[in-house]
Length: 148
Image 1: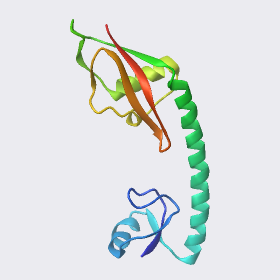
Image 2: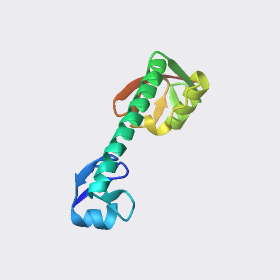
Image 3: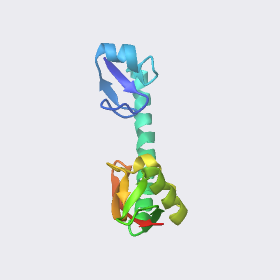
Image 4: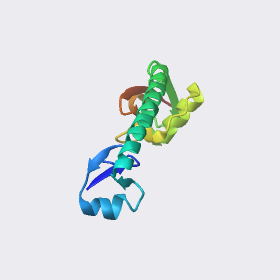
């Protein structure tokens, strides 16, 4: 069954793509949820305009992400937390704490879900936090955790 996606669907495609999916998946999931339309000739013409608008939006988002990355890569974000004598924190520094510190120190608002920590930071010192703002824009944020 050929359908035109109205939204981005993981492991299927992006908005405006014409994809071939299983009949049941299209009929029972994508179409009822409003995520796809049956690919008729008229809908296929609309798909090209959807793709153009998606490309324009994607370019703008990538440029904005690159601007933020250029501002944050040289910066060192400082976070203070209560710690013991051995440098272990009482608690941890999470992505929400990092996003809050970035906004307070640089004025740039980052979504905490764009910060990728495998585990919360539990010690003082300098740490690298991977940030993925866009599919093509990834960088490492330098974070300095100091004891209060």
